[in-house]
Length: 110
Length: 117
Image 1 (cartoon, chains in turn purple, yellow):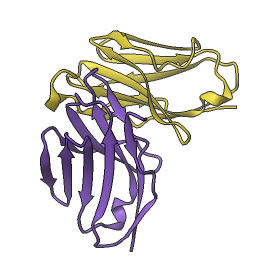
Image 2 (image 1 turned 90 degrees about the vertical axis):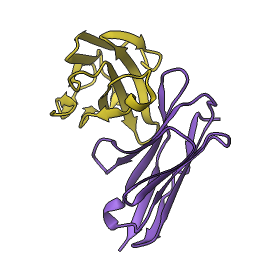
Image 3 (image 1 turned 90 degrees about the horizontal axis):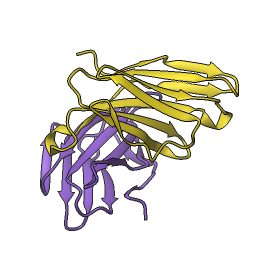
Image 4 (image 1 turned 45 degrees about the horizontal axis):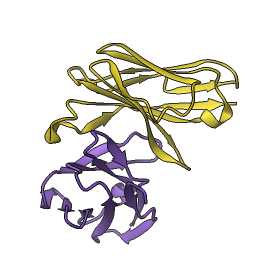
């Protein structure tokens, strides 16, 4: 089992819809969870971090964390074509390492 | 702050040549990371430093790869000799403090796209 798993996609949603990106992790003592956005040919850019169970909202983005289920998700409301990118889930483990998932490609159709 | 700075942005070299990639982390960040990204393997951690000391180099693929951090504002990743399978984008990232949950976000540089012919 990979330490951080994501559906590689591509996930295709129409403009204005909600995009839902999911991630599971294996290390139960993980403390910090991140979502990075990576446009083609660019470097990963941090868009959300979450440390406690529940939801965290920032503009059109909501991160959801459930440590009991070892599950973290990212919701993008009112999806825009500019949101089309690869979204990387990253988990900071008990071993002081941050492990990245393989990423989910998101396409938002105009 | 200018963010993480990497050079060169693109490097094309021939098999067998030595390649040196450079990184300047964000000032005040205690941790520096080197990653490699390919389509097949995704983003792989190669090595990371804390206060200029290498902490975990288990991701370094072979002895051909070496990394140094002579001071808090500079690090190099060297490949000698380079091979075509080393072709990838190499990212450097820095973080304030891995021990504190709210301070271990990593900030990435623009990357170096390496092509080994």
